[in-house]
Each structure stands twice: as structure tokens, then as C-alpha cells.
Image (tube, rainbow, N blue to C red):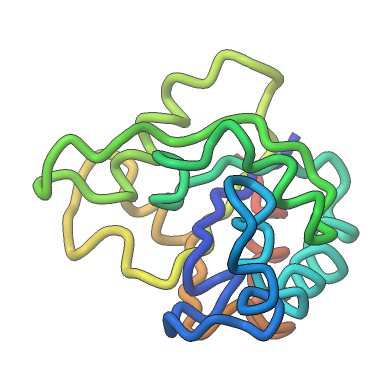
Amino acid sequence: MRVLFLDIDGVLNDNTGRPTREAEIHSRLKGPARWAYELDQERCGVLQREVVDKVPGLAIVISSSWRVLRSHAFPYVLQANGVHAPVIGFTGHKESNDVSRGEIIKRWLDGWEGQDLEGYAIIDDDRILHGRVFEGSDAIRKRFVLTRGGIRKRKAERLVQRLMLPM
């Protein structure tokens, strides 16, 4: 199994804060139905076609701040937007500003007790290490793809390359 640590804002939407036409139309919806419209269909399509379809056995771990508020519904939100990879978990909460998202991902990896991992990659619109060095930070840095304004084909190709790196 290969795992994708997926940020949402800035990866599956453009993170500009501008609502899409669909979001404006459905702004009166509540809960998961509304959240589904906060994702960009084009970016979700790129993730599905260029990553999920090309990496057999890919599973997703939500590493976005969305994990805090929306974790119970997130597998359905992804499916409603055409992303059909299983969500197998969520990274832990950030205890303080002294802990980077990279360290939180490392903790998730260290605590994983399921099926053997063949590889992993991380996509985020923020520099997840923030210059911090810790045991395993070099490995995380090699598997990281930075995106601005949402995932595009070129970034998806880099993501697949990193997912295929052996553990």
C-alpha cells in the first residue's frame, strides 16, 4: 500500500477564499453537502486521473486542518468530487506552533500498525517542515510536493514519482 498525505486548501481548491459558482448556488446547504462544493472539480479530477488511477493500492491520509472539523464526512466529500481512493486516517492535531506538519506526519508513520507501507508522499501548499530538522525530516523532504493554487498535472507527476519511491 502507498499513502498520500493530502492537504485540502491550496491543493483541491485554490485557497483564494473566492467561492466557486457551485458554492454560491449551494451556499444554503449544511454539513457535508456544503463542504463538497468547497472543492474544485478540476483539481479533484487531476488528483483522480493523474495520481489515484496511476498508483495501484493508493490510500489517503488527510493531513489538512480540515481533519479537525470534517473528518467524519471527508471520505464522502472526496467521493462526491470524483476522488475514489480510500481514506485510511487523519494525522493528529498540532499540539503547538513548535511542531511542524512534517513532524505530525512522521508521528503518524511511526504509529501505523496496518498493512505494510510500500511508499508515501505528501502534497501541501505550505512548507511543512518550516526549516525544522528532526529524525526523519530528510526522508519527508524527499517525498514532499509543494503546490500553489491547487494541484496541476506537473505537480501530480511529481507526486506519483515520490509515491513510487521505496520505503
